[in-house]
Length: 271
Image (cartoon, rainbow, N blue to C red; front, side, top):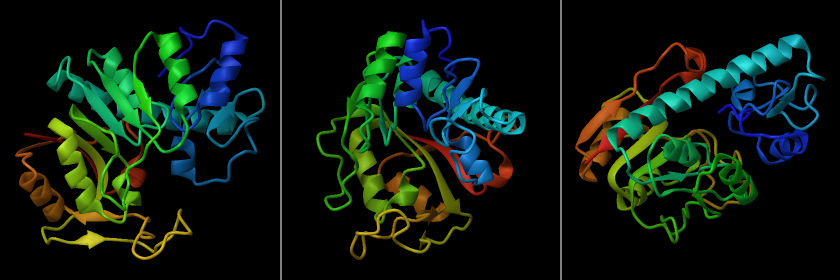
């Protein structure tokens, strides 16, 4: 999202650069945020930014780095906006919750596209970032610092919303079927998933080497690396949960490159 029309002075721009990082925002002609560059190029961050690998500053970055960073995160914004357009058009005025919302890009943009009562759950303390965005944008997203609990297979305190969103979340969870069941309880009308999957009809779950992020998790909770369902198991699971209609948002060349996108799919499952 381009925040330049909403940031009034250098103080606000500096504060935005301190609060926002992972999601793709344009803060000024010289400052942008977003994870997409590190996803595509897998480089160590920090050399070309005064803040972090997810915040690029044109004043200190090389032209090559700045151009790559700008292009990568433009593609990520375009992908997110295309998904949100599909959701908002299908459920105008509906409510939306994003499980793993980070600084609130999806709920805030959903509200700006006409949806209401939008909220996000996130274990990382992004409350100040969401408060800041609500203040400058005039939105009213609710932020809850609470993550999915894989011990109880629930999202404590979360009530029902029309649409539940989970983008690149299931890949870090040891219990993908229970996570889907949790989403099924939260979502009145639809679940939007962006997730990788094996291109097979067999009912299988795939894991990579465990304890990638969470070194202290005991068995089996350390299976946190590239968790994915087969196409057959995902589709069967969503049907079983009552989501009979499935719409894929087809890949577009304006999104992140195909080599990164890989076997992931953007899917809207509706009751």
